[in-house]
Image 1 (cartoon, rainbow, N blue to C red):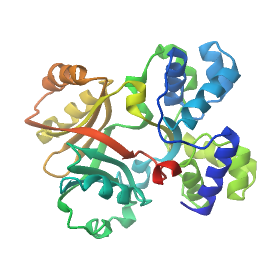
Image 2 (image 1 turned 90 degrees about the horizontal axis):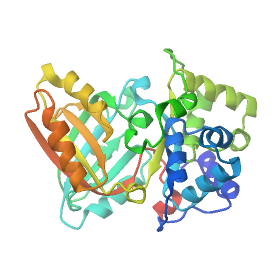
Image 3 (image 1 turned 180 degrees about the horizontal axis):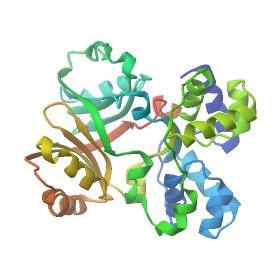
Length: 345
């Protein structure tokens, strides 16, 4: 984590009056879930905007959000849209010696170029997303892995096209009618911006806390508040910057998540991917290279719901020849390259 990101983290600790803790038992009610739905639509929506939609006070929304964040079960992060920089990155599936998965995952989580590090299939497999701009992709991916005899096999998947992902694929969190949250949606237009020093600093800082105030952000980065606000708006307007939610899924009632590695004929790939993107259980879906050409992350409440998703929805997709499922046992790191500092201890 850079000095700027560390300053943002310290600012967040002060502004919330609480250090992020390891996940604790926490009870959620309908207002909590509605707040999370609003944040899934716009992670930087003001407390007053959310309060108006929900019919509660600003103080209620602020208190509820800070409670969830300080408990370590929810964080808003600002991220760079990978497709805007010419590459969606890579997935690496690592088969490990039994018992070694947690240590390998923890080592990978400390790297700034990794995200979505998860233990799969009884802790014998680690999934890791590698971030890399197009200009960096000539480097050997395997050379950047921790060298360990405990990794017995590695399969690399280059991500070619994203059908579902980010806040556009958090349908499983929906508890409010679409018309109520529509005012929060941030319109995105076609366009491109060249990234500079300020942009890189913004991505780093917002990867720690996507809701840090403009004044605190400006102070941490050493730019004026008006410049920071204007540049953030420009990045959002063209879709270069978006805000995502990092969550402890079991706390929110989702205890059966899995990756699906699907083989689909190329002639059916776009149709199958587009159909998957419409299912609320699908948090991510992308066309890939490798032994399977469609990678899907499904989030369900329990095994019964997952079974129904597989049989009633995946089973009806056109042209699917093969599906391999890998249950997610534990998530070590989520979308941001900056994990919670408490989780890094």
